[in-house]
Image (tube, rainbow, N blue to C red; front, side):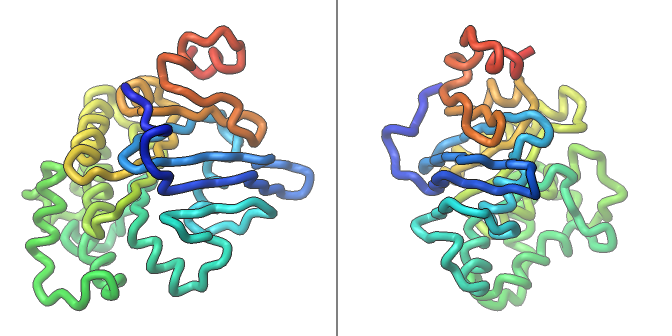
Length: 250
């Protein structure tokens, strides 16, 4: 798959990001660029700093030093209201789907629309937007179901629909295929590809799934010891003779 890093403008740029907890240097000078229309996969062992980087990226954690620029805005300099507004352009698919168990599928998808009225205004009838988002993930008939009535794969799709309903320019995927059977995981991968083509989203994908990375990545970063140890296409990294790189593909 063609790399886009040298042909389009960066929509996220992270420079020299550092974050420590006591003597544990989780991020130790991490650098990253995500360009428009790109699927960038980040792989790293547990505890390598992937989740911390994501939290810093969306303003849930404050880095010790370094800069994070999203769509031209420096995260560290934004007021709370500005940060909330920027977050409507960044969708986040959580590993555990994070649906509200006490809400129907419809209510789960309505929640971000009710919360972020500045982007869409007050919407009297949310049904068209909810149905469009559900149909994008092939689950229009689930609108009145409760999360407990859904399979794991269906929950992941509904969570993705909730992410799409705000029409974000960037989507952050946290282990999108973890815990799913191979067939359902492949369906999620195909769905991610379809969404990128339909909406021209830029996506940052955190995954341990080599098959997912092979199918979806325009470019990959391997996170080791708090830095971007290696970067390239799947084929470039997969054929490397470096033992640390090869360890990711075994």
